[in-house]
Figure: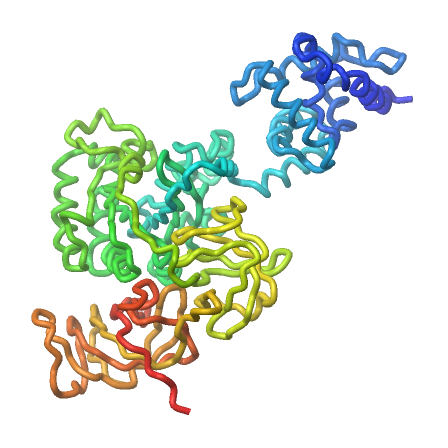
Length: 587
């Protein structure tokens, strides 16, 4: 009989013999190294995994009677002892024992399951042909969880405030790279994954892109080096829990970017300081202007301007270049509606090297403020009402053992098994489970990014832009509304009958301007007595708009997040506005 087949059985016997020891006498168990051999072989993979190692060197073949000799076991166990996490052997054994105990009653995977398999994954690859099946399993395991989970905090810990940060700016300014670097610095992406990305990026001659791959996960985005969809990731600091929304910079994907910005509390405008790149991003056709404006319209109150690529040879951390970028930006941001003294904060950084993101930079003595992550941590808290009615605009939906929706809870709080109503179709749904940033919870407060699994509605019946409301306080829905709009850029005049695309919270719908009611004077705020026949660029007017279908919206003064909108046409943002009143439908 092949020794490979007998080995596993003897391991099992070995295990049975060992089992009572830890319970009876821990110190003795710690002293013998065999305990270590046990956790190294979780039951699932034992048969294939161990022999592949035993075979590795001729000295380790099992003795003829079928029981492996202790020396062999020792040799196998030894390399595992100094685990990656830097635990000592004793910690290791203690940790693993609790894992074993956990596993026995439930039969399912205990807490440490994934990690064990990770470590085994490392071993497996050396195992050669025998380890092939394992390796495939490992691959699947790793694919499933590209990000380490954040351990749920102990129940008595105060809940960290959730802040959603959107990264915006011109294409190739370095948004995804900064996002990836932050995740690495805060330990959300491990070094091994990044090294894997780096290898893959090198093969494609794109070695400077590897950090952005932590957020640009699909193949198309990686091949072209452009973000298309809004990437999501999260990281924690001492006081806050941040969700990164990595918006695309390319002008073809601005609609996706608006969806991302509508969930954000805070925007980070990334500017490239490299000669030529800043200018193209900022001039008329660049995305820097449009994004800053859209972020303001989407309700972002605070803007951090990161002047990136300061380590570039053309810049070399020069104060002059930094000031030059700053001088050009301030007047523009002021015009958009940010207050330079209170709402805007400038800081230099380098996404690729990670300079000034977590640690201050030596090459940059002139910048005295806090690095980026500490600055985020020190921002004042956002005030959110958790006692308001539930409002959760839906960003995305998919099927996964039921209907799953994603969105940011704007107000109110949601708990498990709660009954809610999906507007505008008035479907009553029940919340089966709640995930806040991929960590399961029982209830959620405003500002959190949630995944909800719903009962009582099919995935086909939901569209992005629908809203979950509390049954006793539904949001308003309708097709016609009056709004105040500011025409930002439009070559010709706009008359009644003009069609554009309306972006309001996460909803995208075609609208027609049916009537212009009056012009508003920008300085005094006076309304004209007569109805204007048209409006042109830089004018403010009040108009009646009619959507192609029923949409959910609120007036700006009742609920600002659902009352502000942008109008776009021909790939450009034409106007921004706020809903003044809803007009009931005539039958």
